[in-house]
Length: 166
Image 1: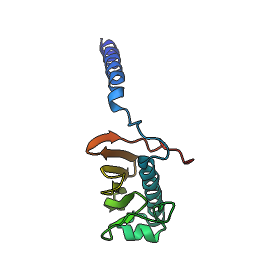
Image 2 (image 1 turned 30 degrees about the vertical axis):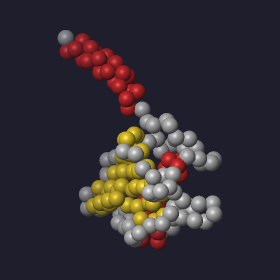
Image 3 (image 1 turned 90 degrees about the horizontal axis):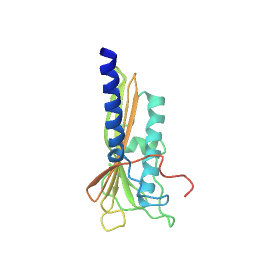
């Protein structure tokens, strides 16, 4: 009797999940060369730099100054210009400012996490765009999440959705 109940439960859960997939789909509306892809590319570079720092120092960089010293710098526009920034907690790229939102290092427990952000700049085509990547690493698993707000509307982001051949 128990296996029959479990089989029915599995089928019901499987069908429910398959119906829910369209609601969980990532935002396919941006293309290679888009502003979103610019932000994704630069945030992925920041994540890779944080991963490198963690491997070397057993801790993530806790501020932007450490990331910049380690070699992270978002690309400027083709003419060499960057968006203006105020303060030392963000750095300007072509259309976005980039920064660390939070960092937690706990080498004793093996728990490490950080969140990075790309913020569109007021008065530019990127205004209203916010992209975030969260990464959590511990002894048992690694988790990464990417999402964005486009003028306040939330959507998940596929970090592999933009090719390097831009």
